Length: 129
Image (tube, rainbow, N blue to C red; front, side, top):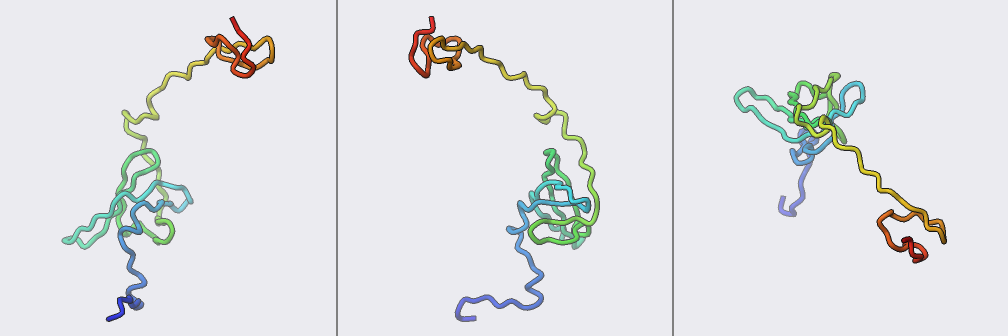
């Protein structure tokens, strides 16, 4: 291979670079998006591959290669997955204060809504005090 071209044999067509898999969406058999591939680990002694998934509820899940049906544009699992509840310190569990409502006044000249603290109308410049 002096020209720098890569030849693809039938065996090479089944190989997928790890960089291509990281970040792919993970879908279960119901068609539900579970999350994205965060990392791949290899157990050389046990001769197994595992996927670390960051689930859409911010938990992390591990799936073995045996749980994967196919890897193309997404990682398709062979099973349904029920996501566990997110950790207690997850931001979606904490109640944030409701947004504050800023009082408005209506310009007597042009009818534009302007913040109550304004001295002049932002549309026509009329004095509001």
